[in-house]
Length: 459
Image 1 (tube, rainbow, N blue to C red):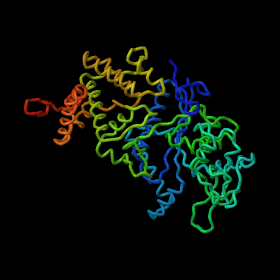
Image 2: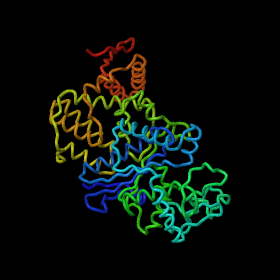
Image 3: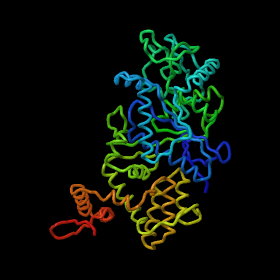
């Protein structure tokens, strides 16, 4: 079975065929570094880390670019609030980003370009768009893209320009011909002499957000990419504008495959800083180990919403403990190369080849762990560890992992006991058994009696 990817552009699963056999060029929109990363950022980073890892495991040579936006209105405001330079703020936040990503087992991308290092490429593309009549200079000094002059505008979001206008107000004061026209170059204002700006043929100013990715992707990967990815909130307007800019300038498709990960949600709302319902990666890491957070993300398909709660992270830790318990039974045999003809490996591969279906792949790991529990096979334990390595889990020392997890306090144990009692009352005996097993995996033995349930620590 060959790899299939859900292409947002076509809204279909498509067989993956790179432009150049054996090589993949992938660009993923990264973070705007004005603050620490939250779990929503972690979800995107982990999703595309899994994509590039599986592509490599499938024999592809991957060039992976994840950009950094280091000039933006939010960055400027935050630097002013903090009383520090923009460079000091962005350097500090990039270091924090790397700390968080490294902790979560996310490989560094091949290239991690900063927008401010690609101003000449942005200006060159803007110049090309102006020469083609796709960009215009507004009365306020900005240079804008004329979306109505690009025939394919709206093809990624699947909406016409008129549909995209729903709810928009006319932006006459912004000097735009159309409210949807993105700013390519923001003119420096005389009233703000300290504003960050670069000299250009369009006058002093700075780039708009959308042109940054168009220029960086083209400079590092060429005019057409194999895969372009990011969070689903970037489909419109960011990725739609990238397509218009890049294809308008180069007369070639920007990317053959478009991938978008779903949100992490809290109370059915997207996790975001603007809504104030976010949880910083570094704060969650104070309570949960990094592998548990990664596993929590892997248990949902990357395109689906993922509901965040301590209960779900606790369950992820318990489930991961079950896998490590199997690896603790027998020393895994070293696997130098996975035999993809093995039934478990074949099922794992089939799952990952169907749009990186990590929930199904994880289910295979649990089946294989059950086999290890029954047979005590070092070979099968080695395969379990090797398959886990394809998505960067199960690589820690089992005993160390299990010891670190055996720290439930009395209150946390009672919460699990109460949840089990509620499951039994609802006749959900499978859930009750799962909770009992999860506690047992952490060294907690439950004892039922007519007066209630007590617990002891396993000897």
